[in-house]
Image (tube, rainbow, N blue to C red; front, side):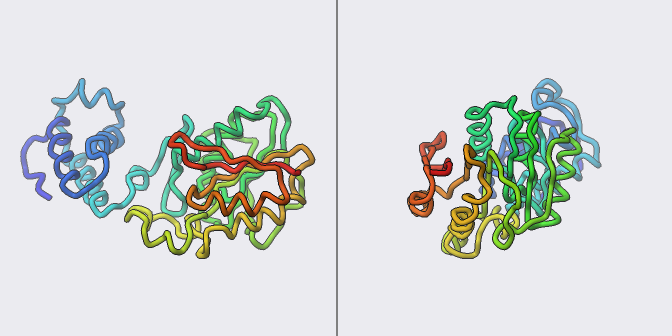
Amino acid sequence: MALENKVWRIIDIINWSKDYLEKHNVDSPRLTIELMLTHVLNIERIKLYTDYDKPLSESELSVIKSMIQQRIKRYPLQYILGQVEFYGSKFIVNQDVLIPRPETEELVDKVINENNINNDYKILDIGTGSGCIAISLAKKFVNSTITAIDNSTSALKVAKQNSIDLGIENVKFAYADILTTEPKLKYDIIVSNPPYVSNSEMNELEPELSFEPNSALTDSSDGLEFYRRFVTIFKNILSIDGVFYLELNSSLARETEKLFASEYKIEIIRDLFDKPRILKGSLS
């Protein structure tokens, strides 16, 4: 990769990198280099174009070069930058946690819009990962207590750090494997974005996903293992008027719906792309 010895201005880097990334089949090449530059130079995106003539130092060039090399190997941009924007906050992410997705913002949005944010709820987030769901809810439901569990101690470290960085105090993080343990309390709201990629789908995923934690993506089975477990335990841990919101694998929506249909009152909610994305339910 030749960034030969010449003066490289911001605009030169944008133009050259955009073509280079495009040639290596990287998605959104211009946006990618813009985000790398804003991160390295610590500036807003608009400054890339108002200060387009500004030359980069050798050390800045070296960091950018290393980032581009990682990205063409399909290492996720969010891990390269070490952070991701989710529901209006910046979250630290690394290879110990799943990268938060826009469709999960829709899950958070649903919970916030359908429940009274001033109430004092007990909320449970199962498989918290980076803590993005729990923390985003905690910011809105300031009178509520959110318990966020995960079966990965490394993920919990990231989530705790995110809550500290964002100044959130009404979330408690705890280690628990929901497949083998059952929470003791009853919760008013339960949310989860569980591992739902089936074994057969794992082979069809884009290369970037191979860098994300396997156990946060797949149940190493048919993609329904966590939902089966939820069917069993929700009747014991959901309060009488409680409600649960689960993110779905849209290709397994029908099967998931069948699992819950006989024991719970449920509804399937479609996402912005009209795919079945959220299973909402309560005790029947």
